[in-house]
Image (cartoon, rainbow, N blue to C red; front, side, top):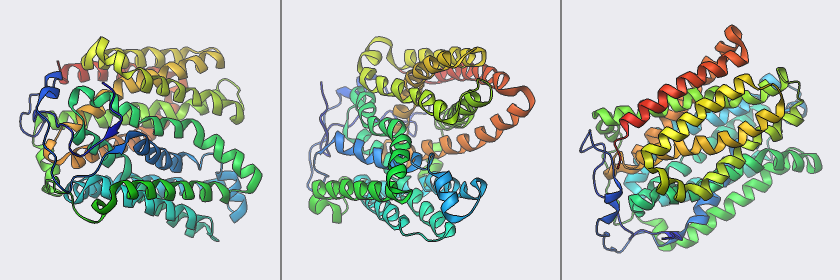
Length: 427
């Protein structure tokens, strides 16, 4: 069954979340529960494509800076090291806002908060085009990161509220198309635009796009934009984090997310480009498209999620995806030339989302009465793992080099996949 839009009155999965039964995991049978009847004040139907576009703008806002740093550094008369504060200025607020965005969305309405966040994110991008000092631009990047971080977790939590569990992973994969396309297009698009019109042009174009998408979301919400949905449970605010961590399964999910971020998001993945340059003799311009092959594999997952889930199930995808990641990281450690790395990157994107997609879906069921908080906690754990992983992998490079670090990551990912399969007791 195709799910063309995300609606307020759609069915909810059965309440076998982590907060009520620590040892239980949602099963395919959850989808059979009778739909919750529509009540006035619920958000109207919103096309999943519009959610994906919102994800694209925030994902592009994160990745657009990759090719722009040299130009910005030159414009402000600083070195690359100083200009790198623009990256930290975005990433730190992006991760830390998860602490408040989830509870706020549970209390006031997830789509409402996400809509306002997209609009404020767009305003920050447009304001960035008028920055005259590096410090001001860093502050505006922090503003953008703060509001961008609220968008994807809240929209994903709303999808979980609205889609039966059996359809949820497929629907989330369609939503993630926006993020994947941002990974593929944001860096190269920003670089080409900057070459033609200067480094400020990508900020202006993306800012206008974000305002347009935020405006479309506001129009689809209509009067519901200005009032709390009748379906909002209210939640327990920050106390919901304690509800999540009191259960063994909740702690398991947060630990898995942290290790996922440490070994992959912040560990092996960001260093592939440097490996191509320093070990295999590629230029930065050549390394970029090779690394972007990861996005091709990720996009393939968004199209293949349904048959993969039907064929292997969630535990099977955890095993297959995690095992493939371990094999591919081993292949990366042994790669003799860049064409091998190029093939590995495409396969890596598919394998990663097979593994990570299941974890994301489980996170949506971790705290059914406060999904925004649960998904936000998952994103925060992922972010903290990413930060720790980048430091740990960088230290590993000085001791055992790129190939040794990739091999160590492969062994650790294999253990992680086995632990994930054992912990995810799904049908």
